[in-house]
Image (cartoon, rainbow, N blue to C red; front, side):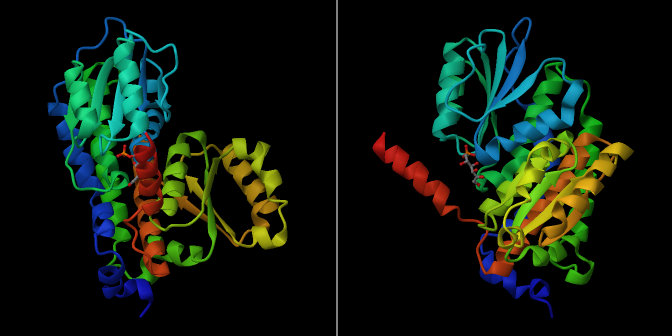
Length: 355
Ligand code: F6R
């Protein structure tokens, strides 16, 4: 029996159940949509100029996925800030969505204070902590999401209520069908790549096996999929405890391809994963093929994975679901618990102690 087909592996290496939580993404998306639909929202400024989603790590990626899934449908620009400072243009006509799962992240708290000082409309999405208190005290809205997850495993809860808020504020057209389609395709991916499906028929387990001992370089086939590539990279970091890189076509053909001239022993440990949406124009696919032939031929391996669904949200979240599972299987293959992120906690603790 192949290692990933042995159920006892998960009991030994995944005692906190990261795999089961990841498999629940579709449920989380549906539940989070209801939470967002029911939440009390602050009133919008009279003429909202833009939306800033502020957060770090697993709480920030939801902002990238949101921006990518809505794209040109948004009636105002949406930017993601991963910093302790807000741009100076944030003021009374700004909407700031502060996302922090714990509600205790230093950078996000600092940005929320700045947003309040600037007179922006603030909506916090959090499971609690000081962020919930601050937002409520400052007259902003608070969407409370369920506690008890690792932040990165609460992606649906962190992201989807913001989508509901944008819709309810009238900054985007109806998103109900996007959410429903996304939940459905995510469910399909989970059932095809779950632990009970043997490796031979399981795309996530197979890819995890191929990546053992390698550094994954995750390349989005188009800018629309950048956020998914970044998520894959971060999940390899946090769940599999390994180095990883991400980039996107066509930008990477203007710089990173040259980096494939690295010494052979370096290239030999890097495996390329190209994320495709399935709707790439012929010329974009041609660019990917040419690059694969010229630059990636010395890689340890090149793999292509395809998102599902007609809508951007579906393509992104189906890729996220697959990547999350690959990263957890890779951790278990390495004999590592995917849940603890000691390196993140240690820096936070040191910084708190020195404050
Ligand atoms: C941990 C994780 C981290 C956190 C980040 C910010 O699972 O993914 O990237 O998301 O350290 O913490 P929160 O999300 O609590 O604001």
